[in-house]
Each structure stands twice: as structure tokens, then as C-alpha cells.
Amino acid sequence: MLRKNKSSENLDRFIPNRSAMDFDYARYMLTGAAVKNESADPCSSKSSLYRKHLAEILNINRSRILAFKNKAPPSSKHTSNSSSSSSSSPIRHRKLTKQKRRIHKFPERILDAPDTIDDFYLDLLDWSSGDVIAIALKNDIYLWSASDGSTVELLSASDEIGPVTSVRWAADGRHLAVGFTNSHVQIWDTSAMRKLRTLQGGHHLRVSSLDWNKDILTSAGMDGLIINNDVRVQSHIVSTYRGHNDEVCGLRWCPSGGQLASGGDDNLVHIWSLSSNQWIHRFEEHSAAVKALSWSPFHSGLLATGGGLGDERIRFWNTNTGACLNSVETGSQVCSLLWSSHERELLSAHGFSSNQLTLWRYPSMVKMVELEGHTSRVLSMVKSPDGYKVASIAGDETLRIWNGVFATPPKGKSAEERRREPFPNIPRIR
Image 1 (cartoon, helix red, strand yellow):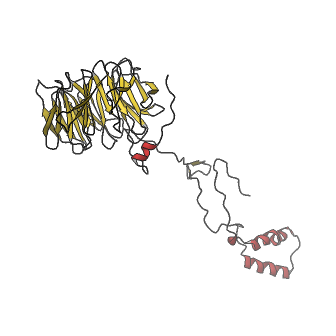
Image 2 (cartoon, one colour):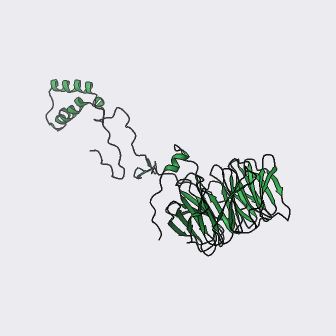
Image 3 (spheres, helix red, strand yellow):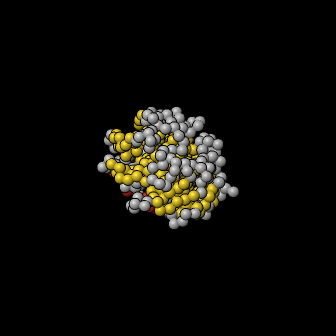
């Protein structure tokens, strides 16, 4: 009798090939052979000749009755013996699980960044679509090519103008906007390594934040003003936003260009429209300066904001309705925020006390990994044009390149398809 397999083995049922079975021989063994063995009387010569002839035909010198002509097909579930030398070793299944993504916890490169100004309110780093990092080191700006590692000095400002307080690349990856302590903003052509023009007359104090919306360069600074500058015309100031009572240190246009988010040292976040000089929403929930702002690339109107020392929270807003969707305690000063371009993940950069980068899974806001290494607060953080690498600069005068923080683009789906995928519902915080 065949031994029944253990339920843990769960092997496939084998169906015999009946063309390989010898039913005549089986019948002989069940009848004639049994009679021969059990009978005490000698067989007649005729019967003996018959059995001898039958044995020659059936080839009774065989031990197996049922046989499989063809090799059994492999099991649908992969199994393997733990030890080939032991017949009693259990069969273990190979679990077909999704491979866990490996996140590199150490920077790929650490570059010296001497004379980095350790000022929470400044925006000293940006990564262009041409894969070039612009970094402000006191009065100077250097361009570091991520493709070949080369470095060139773009400008060195005089003490009457500098230090440099903000930098921002245009979408073309060629033009760079630079803000200065003396309230001026310069536009540079980095391909030709020359200054194109200087924007002045709008701000009265240092320009601490910049962002582009096509041909509109928006600047904000210590005077609390937010100014839209059209760089194509001589009279560049086209509109001014007034709503902050202190320095504006965070400034980000949404991907569609229809809304602008601003954060300030007055603990306020404003949402502005390109077509109006009046703010659409005013968020007062943060209890410290708001520098970290990041728009979701997947969901229209989803904004993440981070509060400084004394607040230490990441908040999520629906800027279409003005609702606060969620609030998460981080335990440290939030200096910068970046959404992943490919997955539902958010990266935050922090100051006191760990000075770490933290990767969160959205919307659960479960910590995936913490990247440590900076010995001072992270001042600015940007991602590469492919959305895979991250660069961070801190008061410890180092620029660190983190490879593999964000996941690579998923296969089979375009970026537009990923953007259209909805987020799960999130409870509103009242």
C-alpha cells in the first residue's frame, strides 16, 4: 500500500500511465501463482507446462506490478530536501515572497563644503535637470557635475552683495537664480558661465527662498514679501503677495503651477493662486517656523509641511479644501521634505537632536529607515532628476550623496499612470 503523504508536503497526485501496466501478469500473480504456493498437491505435467509457458510469456522475474512509464511531472509547489543523506529529513517549501527593497544607509559620497552658512532659513542647494548640483558656500557658488564629479566655480560675490542666501534652477537645467543678502536676485546662464540680469527694487532685505513657475521667478525674503518676477520683460515685478509677518523661508509652486505654498518664521503656511494677490488658505497649526514644503507628485493638492524646533511635526493638507489630513510627531526639527517620484514615500531631513534623514511610507507614516551621518542639522535636501538619489548639506560643512534612498521607477507603468492612482482615504484631523 502506498504511504499517504503528510499534509505539510502537499505533493501533486500522480496519474499512472496505464499503457505501461501489465494486467495479465497481475492476474497471474493473484490467481495462478497463489494457487501454486498454497496447493500441497503436485501439479500435473500438463498444468506444469502451462504455467512454465505462461511464465515465459509474462516474464515473472519482476518485482513491480504497477509501474510509471514516464517520469512524474514536477510539483506545482517547489520543494527541496533539507538533507540528501537522511531519508527522514522533512520537505520544506520555498516561500515565494516579494523581494524586500534594499535601502542604502550610508552615503555614496561625502564632499567637503567649507564655509557653509549654518542658517536654518536659507536655501543653499539645488539639483538641475541636467544632473548638476548648485551649492552656495558663503559668497561663492559652485557647480558639481553628478555624472563625472567635476566642479567649477560659477561666481564669487563681493561682501557688499553676499553672502549667497538662496539658489534655484530653472526647469531647463541651464539657468540658475541666485538670491543675495543685499536683496538682489541674479539670473545666470550656466552653459555660458555669464550673468544675464539682476532683479532689484522689490525686496529690501535678504532673499532667502526662490522658486520657478515657467518664466515666472518667485522670490521671498526677510521682509515678508513674496514677489513674482517675469524674467522676460524689463519691468519684471508682475505681482506681490503680502500675508507673512516675518521672514519667508519656504517657497514651492505645485507641479501644475496653479498654486504656491509659502512658509515663514511667523509659523504660518499660505496657499496662493497665480491669478490672485490674495491667499486662498492660511494654516496656523504649526507652532514653529515652517521651511519644509513639498507637493505630492501623485495627488493634486496634497501638500506636506514641516515645523521647526518647538513644533517638530509633519502635517498634510488638502489645498483644494483647506483641510488638514494628518499630523505626525517626528521628535526633531523638520528642515526639509521630499516626496518620492515613483512610490508613496516621503523623506524628511532633521536637525536637533539626531540630524538624520527619515524615510516614511505614506499614508501610514511608518518609518522605513533612518539615514544618519550628519553631525549638524541638515540645512537643505534635494533629489536627482531621475528621482533615485538625494543630496543633503548640513552645518557640519559636508555635502552627502545618498544613493538608493528612493525606489527605482516601477516597470510597466508610466509616471502619468502613477500620478493618476488615488491615495487611500485619510482621516481628517480636527
